[in-house]
Image (cartoon, rainbow, N blue to C red; front, side, top):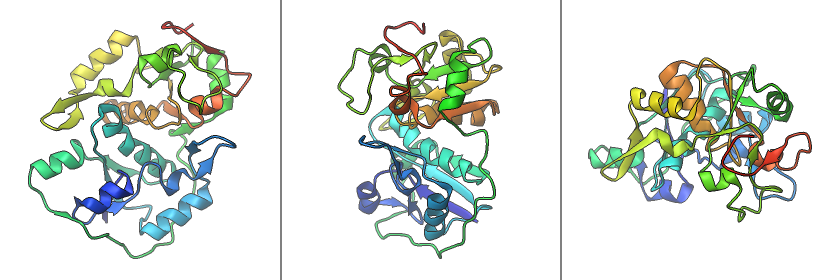
Length: 270
């Protein structure tokens, strides 16, 4: 019951992919919920997720291995972890990340194919959503008012965090959620040859320590659309067995439009 998932865009999948892998892009059917008037997507409804996973031939008790790739460290990781988070939200417990992604697989001369893999359809039913996955605006509002009890972490690059970059028209305001610490998702990765792998656990611990992030304190992770934010969720769960990390589903697309969530500029949290 092992299913291999390619989380890259469909064009890359068609060019070549891991032998036997199915295509489930990080912008695909699992993220079908659209924000009104904005070119951004969030996690689909349970009914939409059930339909998509049934069509793909995935079962709740499958072991799912997800990989991505690309030229940018942050997306090399988070195109995969965004899909992993959605699968975990849907109730699949055994979800794994393929370190090194597609490029490492090719470099090691492992089997690839160009034909589309199709699994027999299933009848996927979500019994309940895993609670340690997504959170929503009401929880973030509480978090902003209770920073002594919870940490808010921004996974975007510094120029987005400070509000210096204003080209992203999906956001109504630029800057960061008041009280948030900036920790870009790319900081978990290191380049080897022409691909990226996760840094050793000890180095990631130093990254957390340097930025003042305490894994013994609950965390809300966010970005613009809950893609980069999924990186922290994965690292905390997979390397540190920390289940008290949530990814803000609306992220800045929602927060920048919510009058109850204060947005500030500059390189300091407050």
